[in-house]
Length: 211
Image 1 (cartoon, rainbow, N blue to C red):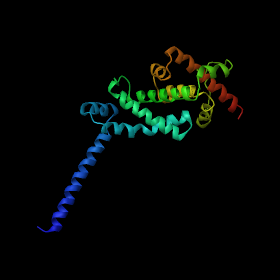
Image 2: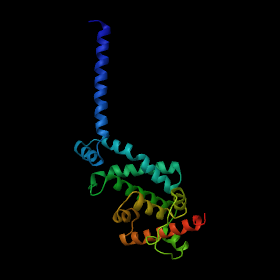
Image 3: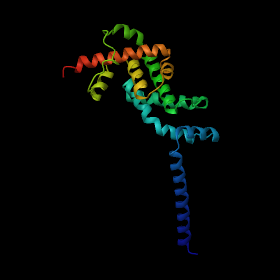
Image 4: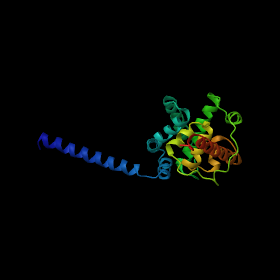
C-alpha cells in the first residue's frame, strides 16, 4: 500500500471522527435547559455548564449593563453571577425554569452591588422623589405607547424600580422570585410594582402626552 493511500486513509478517519463529534455537540446544544442540568448532575461534567453559559451569557450581560451603565463593570458582574450560579446549581430544585432562576440571581447581584458600592438605596430615593396620585394605570391604559420612548422613561427611574418592572413584565418572574431578588416581601413587591408603574406612566405622560 502506498504512503499516499495510508495518509488518505488517516484523513478520512479523522474527518469521520470530527463529524461524529460535531454531530454529538450539535445534539447536546439542542437539549433543553433542564435536560442539560440533569446530564450535568448525572455525569458530573462541567462541559454542560459551558452550554448554559454560552446560551445565556449575553442576556445576563445585557441585564447587568442596563442597570450599571458601564460595560466593563457589567462584564465583571456577569462573571461573578455565573460563578455564583455554578456554585449554587447543585441546590437548584428546578421548581421554576433555569432562566427565571438565573435572572433572579442576576438582578439580586446587580442590585446588591448598587446598594453597597454606589449607596443607591431605594427607600431614600423614593421618599425624595414623590409622585402625585394619579388614576390607577390598570383602569386608564395609555394608548399607542412608543417602545423607544418607554425605554427612555425607564432610564429616569431608580434602578430598583427599573429592575422590578423588567423582572415582572419582561422576564415574567413570580412575585416570590422578585421578592427574593430584591430581598423584600411579596407584599412589598406588590406595593413597589404599583408605585413603579404609576411613576413610569406619570413621567411618560409628562414628557410625551402633548406630542
